[in-house]
Length: 88
Image 1 (cartoon, rainbow, N blue to C red):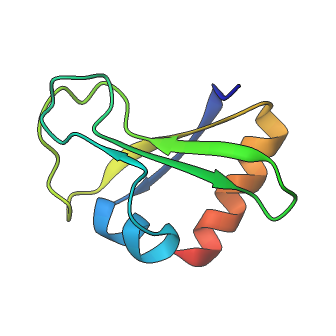
Image 2: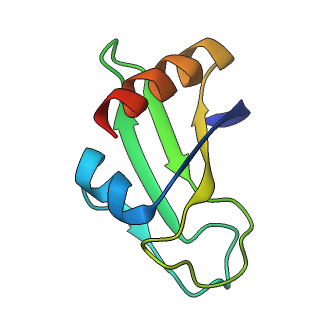
């Protein structure tokens, strides 16, 4: 199960799409707690989730916002952030 351990990254939807592909879930209406969700595996095989949190508005795909990185531990989410920064 993925949970938030304080790890975040600032970037845009379009940059995330270029780095890790299309989101696994998208509902960019602002009506839910998240608009975009990606479910990924780190190089070490850890399951992580990248998602916006409580924006409660439509997000422009070129707008820089803070994204949460969820996982089983802080260490795993930090490693995922490092991998993601290299791809961005």
